[in-house]
Length: 352
Image (tube, rainbow, N blue to C red; front, side, top):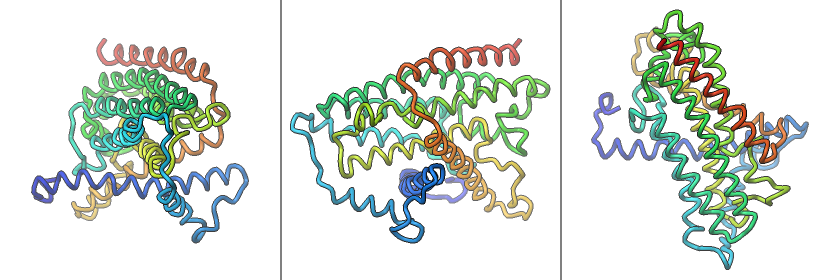
């Protein structure tokens, strides 16, 4: 971006730090609202419709309510860890945006190992959730946090199989470079085999499609979304590691969850759905307006990410919650073996 706008370094750092936050907060507000509307539509209800036109101000009213609620800390809680936990969880979700290429000129940090960085940074989230459960001095909280930690760690294994398979095909772990390999048209997207592979693309398509499904399922588990929301199973654990939290600490957990939803959706889009690339070419190129192309790229990147977020919401209100044994069975007996077979298949196609 500095090459385009010629900004001082400190302004660039400030811009890269602030822009994701300016996106996350409005996105979370609107995502909560639309999730309520989607759930109402699926359940044949109306949903929020009293606060503002069509209920648009309902989430804003909820935020104002949370800001005014008393901040209660249980007498037996570890106060320092109790305060640190929601911050760590949000930091992990927020830091993931540093590696996301919103366009060819806007990316927080052009990391060569950007894909691995996004997986590694989820460790902040795991640590924060464990701290939240331990510090709450509540049996439901600690059970919820242990479930979440085991779930996150387990589902990172099939995620890593997907990543090394993509590396075998592209020889890249940089999200921007992977997005650039999917340029020109929709047939060059990762799900259809990347550009420049010739006849091998046809052989790779089945494995790449399966890997995209595996990655999407794994990201559902890592964001604790239904059918993998065991850490918050209301019928068993009240609210899991959220149980003792109130006010803005509680809001930080939810802000982190929705920030994570878009981050993992953007990761899937960057690896398999062209990232910020347009499926039809750019209007800016057609009209000879170079400044329009990055704006179009941001539009396509956001659209793909938001569509996948919509799929997550749809699945939440359509599928039942799995039991903890079923959740682990899906990972260890299905996703990991299938991911491994796809990796071996791709390696044979590419190098034998």
